[in-house]
Image 1 (spheres, rainbow, N blue to C red):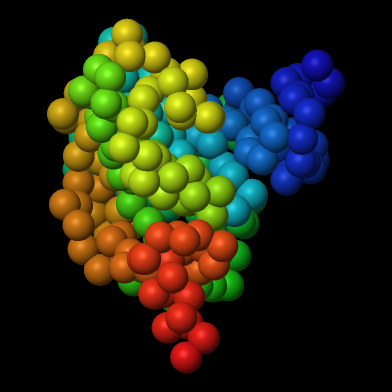
Image 2: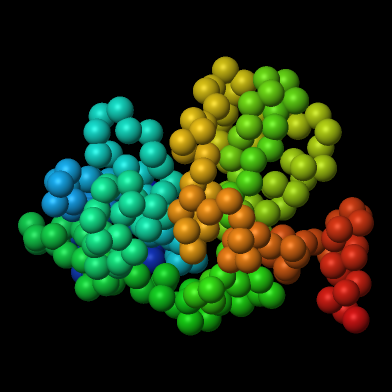
Length: 236
């Protein structure tokens, strides 16, 4: 523990000085986590934990009530979940606490990597704001018949999902990054509708979040027909 900041081994994506006055700061391998919230005139403050990743991704775990299980929300989805009346302005409506005061995300350093991703987004598939975007997908466990969520933000995560789809005997225990067993509950239907679309939190599939092939989700060393076709077309 140093300067009130909990540290873990890994990349330092913000300096201590940049985070010095923020409440609830924790540092992970490729992200930092801070206390955040969104205020509804009707329901009051909904508090959560914001994770800011070095690749620009933003994730919020809601702590509005002791029984709330909403996690991995985009800021837009968290804003909507909070009951904020003037939604669609999450950069101004979602706040963090700096020096005891609520400060909009737009006035902090926390959007630095998000804004860089907007400006420098690469890849052949991009959302309406320029970011490479793949929505979360689900794979059915062949043992317990429960659907498990796969995040597809990085090439590594896309490969994990790609291999799971190809495995006709895929099981919960095969997930490499989440310690999930067949005994764990399946996500609630109300939670599964949030799949990470940057256009709409509860999108059922659109041109912003459904990818039909790009350098992130296709693999030149894979022998499946989908990857072979993509690689051949990319070279043409």
